[in-house]
Amino acid sequence: MKKLIIIFIISFIAVSCNEGNKEEEKMRYTQDSEEINTLKAAISDYEKGNWDAMKKHYADTAQIFQNTTTGSNISEIVKSHQENISGLESYGFDSEENEFEMVVTDDGNTWVNFWGDWNATISGSGKKITIPVHLTAQFENGKIVKEHGYWDNAIMMTVMQEMDSSMTQQDSIQTPGN
Image (cartoon, rainbow, N blue to C red; front, top):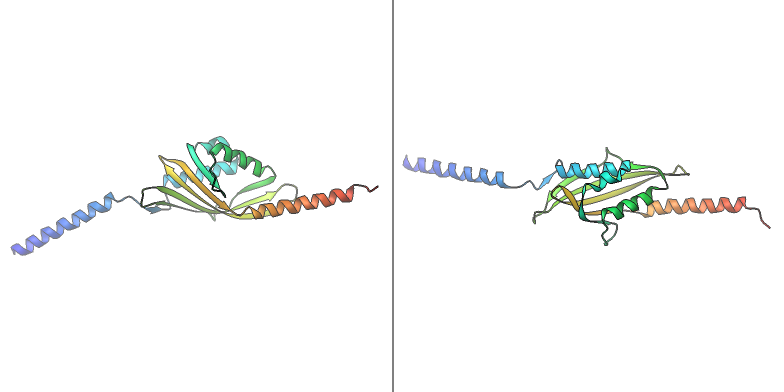
């Protein structure tokens, strides 16, 4: 009987220790977190053109890499966005199709990944384009400190070149010859 009681006590202690370890483990993957909400808010501010609000989601020293290995700060990125959307009637993401996840790496770094389809309508032509986009953002203290963005710029460039070519042909047709 003593052996049975000792086995029971040892088993109870072992189970209790394992439960304590589970509580100490940090969540390593989720699709619902404050960091995800922050990236969603930054994307929403981008879609609204609310540039000052968008900047607040980034640390002052954040480095942003969009289809490049050279980092930019958030002010440079905002300026680039403003230039890139100047020829668009509308732009934004399909919110129903967006996917977000947060992971904590073995080194303890927190990253949020985003996949979505960016849609735009080109001013003057009404031409609609869709570009798949992937963003991954590293967070520290609730702010984005590093972000990588990947998408295929060729889709937009092809449409703009087609429009430019079409405009050039129309100008040459309308210009009387000597």
